[in-house]
Length: 363
Image (cartoon, rainbow, N blue to C red; front, side):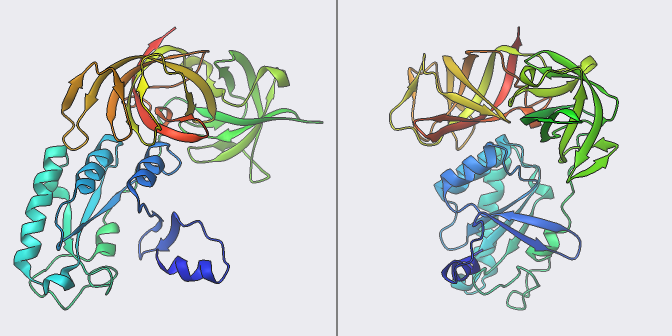
C-alpha cells in the first residue's frame, strides 16, 4: 500500500484505502486500515464489508492493545476468515522460538474471542523485505507452510445471498419521459426479475417492474452487488424516495418501532447518554433516532459485560443500546439479514459511532 505515497507525490490521485491486486486464483481488493478508527468505520458502515482479514502482529512487540481490539471487532462484525502474519521476523534474526512464542499468544487471544484457531494459518513474515508475502522465503527453513498470498488463495468466496428475501435500498428516483418512474439502487439480497411485484418500504407503495437496466443495458434479472435502475408501473414519482427499500410483496421488510444495537463509539466530543438523538445512516436512509436505554457496556478486548446500565458512554466504548426512530424506517437483525443490519451514527458533521442491529421491535 505504501507505494501509493510515491504516486501521490507524482500527482496521481488514488483512493488510499483500496488497492486491487490479483493472485493466481482471485481478484482481491485490499482495504488498508492504518488507524484504529479508520478500521472500525470502514468495517462497520458496510462500505467495504471484508470477506477476510490479514491480522499483522509484530514478533518484536508481540500483542498490543489494538491487536486485541481488532481481533474482537473482526469477530463481532462477522469477518469469517483470517490469516495471521507474525511480522518483523528479520528483527528477530528469523528465530523459530520467537515465532512460536508470538503465535501461541495470538492463538490464545483469537480462541478467547471465538475464532476456531485450528483453521487459521500463522505465517512468519518480514513485510519490509517481502519474505513469505508473495513467495516462500528461504530465510526460515524451519517453516514449512504457505506464504501469505497462498493462504489468501485458500480463502472461500462467500455465497451470494440470493436465497434471502429481496432488498434494494433506493439511492435515487428518476422520472424519465417515455419510460416512467425509475428507482436506482444496489441489490443487497435476493433476485429482482422483470414483471416482479415490488413494494417500497416504509413508504408502503406497490408497483410492478417493467424493465431493469444495469450499466445502460437492459437485463432480465439483477443479483446481489448489482447497481441497477428499474422502471416500475403504477408508482407516483413523489411516492418513492431515497432511503426506501424495494422488497417483494410476500417477503417485505417491516418498519421498526424500536431496535437494539451493538455499537462502537468512534469519535464523540463528549458523551452519549439516554435521550441523545443523532442521525442514523442505514444503507441509503438517514433517520434521527433517540437512544432510549444504554443496556450495557462491553469490554472490547474480551466481549464480556463491563457494566450494566451505565449512565453514559464515550469514545472507545463498545455498548448495547436501545433505540427509537423518530419516523418509520427499515433496519433488520444481523442474525437474519446482515446486509441490512449495519449503520453509522453521525452528529456535528462527523461519524460518532457505528454498529449493528441485533434485535428489532416491529410496529
